Length: 369
Ligand code: ATP
Image 1: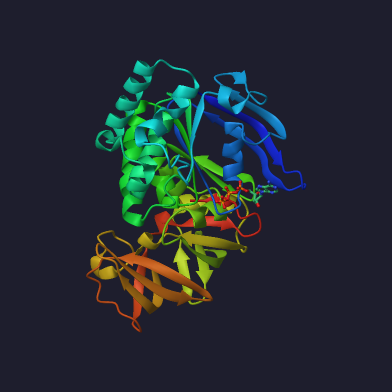
Image 2 (image 1 turned 90 degrees about the horizontal axis):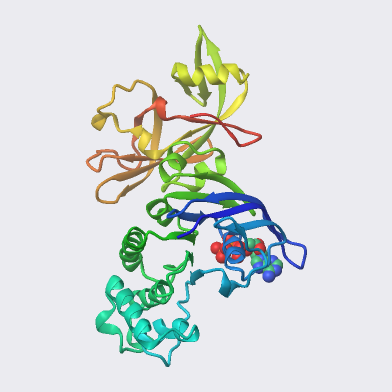
């Protein structure tokens, strides 16, 4: 178990490309930290710097308070699990898991004990004598995990470990990794571009874009209180709806106005917008699909409405999505599957104004939510 400290970490590749910019993060013992962001945002580079597979251009990396920038990867007491498993095809599952321990010249009996313990945790017992090609993708991934577990490292680093698996196996392995984290009490840093994986696994999530950390928070806070437009649009599926509005004041009440609509804001949000000088300015309104209600199924006493011309109706079982166009944007409402709304209908949706997010159009930062 270990704590990590990343201080002002930068990565500039030899061609001058800045892949990671001023990355600062304190990771406590037992945390399950996720690095998430679109392709090329620098998450793998950051992970590889922690592993020691990539030099740190500037800044300090500390493990349990000791600076390890110049410590060899093998001496960092870290185990890494990659997306391509990297198993030796000619070795059995047992031999694959034992390989690292053999290199470290551990006694045979101890190796056997460690491998069997890990196999028990991962339910690999009956497969120990098989070769990788005789295993399913999920089983191979478990062997790759097993190889990391037997080393009892201080920190597990995982780079998109589930990306080669089909959707069903991913969900299954996600639960297993979660259990593994609880069972091993390990510190885990996990890279993914999949926001669902990030939200379900992480105790804290680091959202990255263009080499810059955008927000570090618990899954709930990221979802409910995104700091900026990037995080608001990246976390959540279907994504948050955004619409450019004019903020106006009438008779001491604040409204967000956009084509044909005038939405009254609750006083707590109005107060912040007033104090920060946004009256008569354009602001970006954000509203999640589940905060728009089909009036027929709404149990909340909501009064503010949006007019919608339904362009797509998607029934996905426990819920239905209604897509409609407002100005030039397509918006989504997540409604009760029993909704009678269908393509072509002109409907009204109730909007939960307590759940409105307001962002500055230029800085893209949150003003209030
Ligand atoms: P992905 O999800 O696609 O793996 P990522 O967020 O993990 O993306 P990185 O692999 O960390 O992204 O790469 C970050 C940026 O650094 C990318 O723009 C990439 O092209 C660039 N990069 C990576 N390796 C090198 C290198 N050796 N030299 C120059 N640029 C590199």
